[in-house]
Image 1 (cartoon, rainbow, N blue to C red):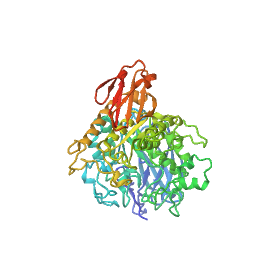
Image 2: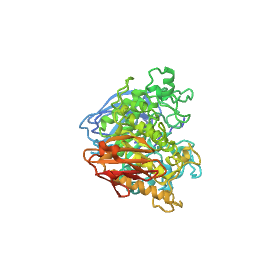
Image 3: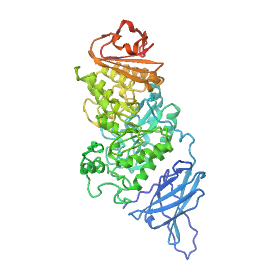
Image 4: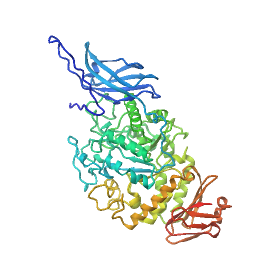
Amino acid sequence: MKKNYHIGTGYIMYPVIFLLFIAMPVVRAQSLRVEPMNWWVGMKNQQLQLLVYGEGIGSSTPVLSYPGVKLEKVHKAESPDYLFLDLRIMGGTKPGNMVIKFNKQGKTISTYNYLLASRNKDRAAVKGFSSSDVIYLITPDRFANGDPSNDVVEGMREQRINRTNDYGRHGGDIRGLINNLDYIASMGFTAIWPTPLLENDMPNASYHGYAITDFYKVDPRFGTLEEYKELADKARQKGLKLIFDGVVNHSGSKYWWMNNLPFKNWINYTDSIRITNHRRTVNQDLYAAAADKESMVRGWFVSQMPDMNHDNPFLSTFLIQNSIWWVETLGLAGIRQDTYPYSQKKFLEQWTCQIMNEYPGFSIVGEEWSTNPVIAAYWQKGKPNTTGYAGCLKSTMDFPVQSALMQALTEPESWDKGLVKLYEALANDFVYASPKDLLIFGDNHDMDRVFTSLKKNPELMQMAMSYLLTIRGIPQIYYGTELLMENSAKPGDHGLIRSDFPGGWKDDTLNGFTGAGLSAEQLALQSYLKKLLNWRKNKSVIHNGRTLHFGPANGVYVYFRYTEKETVMVILNKNTGPTQLNTDRFAEILKGKKTGTDVIRGGQFSLSQGLNVPGRSALILDIK
């Protein structure tokens, strides 16, 4: 078996050089992989479990002596090449290099210097994302190529750059993200969510990042760990929070441990590839068959992504510590957890609650791709349920509203179609523990772009964006949406959905960052979104206000966001022509109010005279 030991940043080996007499046998130093690669003093949870990997290391005896650190237990794995060390790092322990010796037959076969670092004082008080934020979702490989020197990395399975191949690597990287933070911040976004930046050493389609082959390594085609830290630091300086796209359900099939697993049950179904049935409702279904439950949580997501077995306590600890390591290393504001309901429930409870216990102000959003609000609501913290699940997940992705929004804007109006779908979707908020913490969106990296779903209609795009940025919840907008990016040529094609952002490559003729070469329609939506996003930044009534809505009538849907001090009125007019709206119907909230100011165009309206709303538009009014 080929041993892949990393020597360098993050995997530093410290072989011991012995001064030997000629008569003594030569003892060869053993190279080791130890994960987490470092830890911190002063953490709330004093427990730390180290995974140690090296040829034959399982037959050695580890010894350490460091003030404030106790080696409580040593666990052997089924493979002779692993050890798991349980440490306790007591309060008051000083930072420094902790020497761990591995002895065998009275001789030290390897010595490892393990760094216990001091914590950044801001980490414990991290502030997560909330309804005051708007998240910009980015597929890094398709956003901007800031460093062409890392386009091809020798030794990786997929090296070729081919921008004509929707499923190939295009060369976007961390430097491209860093170089364009000013654009993102100036647009009015307050957080960025890059899809995974960790190593995906897979033979094809490695650009998307979801088949991770090393949970502790940045993919070198994206950059380095130091560049990832630089991205986090510079984003914070510009008022942008950084969200980590996590994957704890599965790994890539080329993960370094796949040919030498610590335990046979480290992953599910090692004897054959069995794909999940994707029946996510078994998590809530009182009548679900055990076989269906088993297939759902233990089946592989796809044949290239082995399903990890969270019932193995060493694996579950490894994954929890890995997430905490990234939070502490980067100063993250949150994690978006991929394929959330595919993992074992008990593990999800432990994973979410241990992170939130360490970082009470942190945010985690789980992907539950269901348009049924009862299913989506099940996972949110504070939601009573009948199955015993009680995790600490702050937010879920609001697929029910996303689906309703697309239907509302494309269906013909009738008593049960069109805008009423949006009205009734919002009426389901009573099932959620905290509706304002839901992640709302029009599209993402896995579904047709909004402009495609809306039949490439710029007016409907403006209405969709207006809704997402004025209703309750945490809005997320996919990169390029502001430029009317679409995938109409191949609906459902993930590679095309993740197209290149124009201007991210030096030879691009169009440039979304500067506006060069963009059409009038693209510039108009970009300008509209920029105004709306920057207005929203300081509107607490949108962030935390209450909602009052009125049933759609005659192709018009009206809702209000309000507090004791502020009121915002939003009118969605789906009719092709202008509509004269009588405001008498809204007297319960407009009583005593006289005027409304258009937050985008600046015009003022007299409420007593009714409102003339242009066709196929959203009118957003600050009410006085």
